[in-house]
Length: 144
Ligand SMILES: *[C@@H]1O[C@H](CO)[C@@H](O)[C@H](O)[C@H]1NC(C)=O
Image (tube, rainbow, N blue to C red; front, side):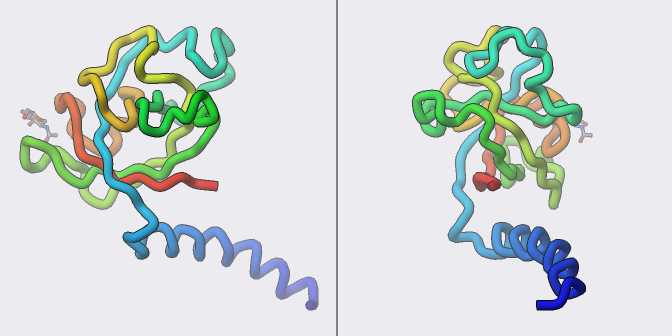
């Protein structure tokens, strides 16, 4: 294949992945999310390493269901808010990519609600929902 074709593929493949993930509902799972606020250190995944947080501050603590005995550390998830108790809580159409850095059951700051699938950083939560909410229903998909 000519070099020009390969360069086009580099741009096409990420779009194709996003297309596959979001327009193919069977690949996404449904769960719940709470939120947590600073202090975040130390985490169950990386201790006191301040470099563990993405510069976007979009990160999360894994609940029991996705913790996977610590294998969840470093995994990336695409997350969107699909509903909540209070109508109008979700920011419609907003999708975030979060990195798992902690275990929700041992996080330094307690989650706004116990027992959720994933506890989002306050920044992450506030990006996809009204930050006054305690919890939301989410659709999520592991990313790469
Ligand atoms: C967020 O929710 C609170 C409580 O329901 C409400 O008073 C506020 O107007 C909402 N903010 C936005 C931006 O929708």
